[in-house]
Every structure is written in structure tokens, then in C-alpha cells.
Length: 240
Image 1: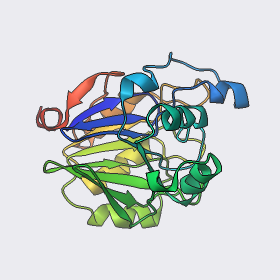
Image 2: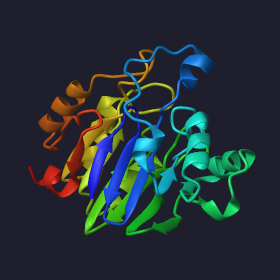
Image 3: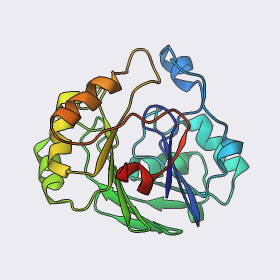
Image 4: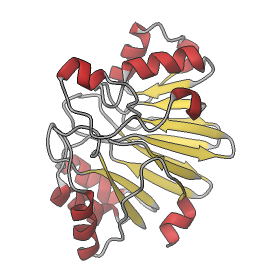
């Protein structure tokens, strides 16, 4: 399994049988709709991604990027689209074929190629928001999605097992945990490696990933900042 970070909460996961994209923002919708200031140029195009599956953890424009989703629907019509109820309903409004949509609420599972995807709990301003656990090739990756640190999430984190790589939001505003809270969640999950996310896209909603990494390491949890658009082998990443 390979992982690529595409700014904010956007990731690509590549296995021998699947190209899975999660929460990619590739348009200028935030600038157009909300006047946000973009910090980095778009790291790739939909054509370059060649997605087999497209997962949105919730229905906010930096995770469900409507212009990008529409381009995926038109350019890659065989791509499967996955998400919780709010995402499912948004896809229906875009006239996505029902045969290409999979509902994934908290506690649900779907299998896409050689990847099993579990809907994990999250607490965000979209009540349907979820996190994700991806399992493939003996590896387990936990993506928090957008979430506050709540008691139900802590309870789930104490019970989840064998997470190799954890991707945790750190921006600390607009319904997300900050770096200190993220380290607390990491301490409960106990992944082999954690990487920060939800920064680097908008000037109005970012955070310092290095400070998080240093705090996580001080707490005894290995952490690393991923380079933008660089492909990493997950197994090698967690073993270094």
C-alpha cells in the first residue's frame, strides 16, 4: 500500500488492485464561495489520479469538493463514490449513478478492490461526518476525518487495535481538535506512526505540523510530516 498526501485532509492510497482517493480538494471553490486564501497550488489533476474509488468523509467543500467530484464523475465514470448520508445525498443531487454510490456511515464497512473500509466515529458540524479505517495487505490506516475530541471518540480509540498509520487533524478550529488534543487521541490509539493533516491549504484554517510532530514524539509516539504529493510505501514508512 502506498500513501500520498494532497493537502488538508486529502490522501491517495494505491494498492495492486485499487487507486483510492480520500477527501481531495483540487478546485478553487473555497476561494470562490468563501473568499479563502489558498496557500499552495493544486498538487495534481483529476486526470493524473486515475481513481477507482473516491471517498468523502463528510459534506464540507474542502472534503466534498463539488467541482472535483463532478469532474471525476465525467472523466472516470467507473469510479465508485463512497461516503456517509450527507455525502450520499449530495452525490444524488449531482445525478451520480446509483450503481456507483456506496453508503458508509459510522460502523458500516465496504470492500473496494483489495481494501476494506470501515466508517469510524467522528464529531463535527456535519452530523454525518465519519473517520475511516482502511485495511489492506495486513496494514491498517486510521484517518480521523474532521472531528473534535469527544468522549465517544476516546472510548472508540481505546478499543481500536493494531493501527499501523494514523492521520490526525490538528488545525484546532471549525470543529476540529488542536495539536494538544490530537496527541491525546494518538496516545489512546497507539499507532506505529502518526502523521498530521488538515493544514497547508487555506491561510485562514491551518496549523504548524512540526509543533504537532514534536509534541507527539515527546509523548512517546513516532510522528512524521509527509511531503506534499510524494508517494510513500506505508510498510516502509511505519518501520523507519
